[in-house]
Image (cartoon, rainbow, N blue to C red; front, top):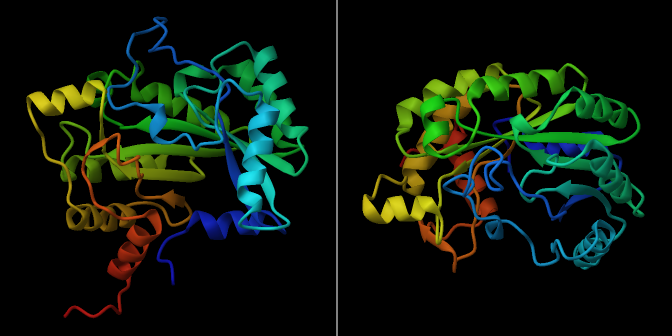
Length: 298
């Protein structure tokens, strides 16, 4: 199907002469707003069980998780290469020496051809970014920041533990070192209506991001957000509303920004709402149909 934006699949295929697949890793990290350094409880929406695949287990070594992930994906494709995706929690929240050891362990695994490192903007520093710069000269590297929102009031409400200025600094400092920078935002956070999301789109677009991930707000069992929603329910987008909003949002972004995803699918036994019943590719097909200028309006 024709794409009407700069999609991640096309972009990543241009970077490698072979198929690559991310393998998620849980390296046992925490977060500074979980362990008490800046807060307790973490972000009000967060439950890492919603995106950890079955082979991802912090009780295993990085190497073991990667080998398990390779066996999982080898069933689908042969001659595959891999990106080690440090995904769970804050994957730069430790000493630089320990971080280096984990990243280098991943790169030593056969057929691992690069790293994707998910983290928070307040958990990088000059020393670590200098290491990332050197690392990016010898392997493929994406550093991905949880941005979530540009609105400082929202960031405070969701217990993010940093402001948007912190995000700007981290993204700019990473990008100026020539590193691919990813960002992650959530559409529909409490207090943010469609107009507020569209206001933020040009701000996000102005950051020197390479890649952007977008997904809808989901209410997950056991989170602080679930408690707030139960006490005083707020509006959650229907599929149609969300598609309409994403179409408008995309048009406000610069054309070279790589868009990796638009939705997230949490396990059914953890998800309270919204329950759309769509797989990621099904949503993407609906979105592309909506973006198609030649689509039938009947």
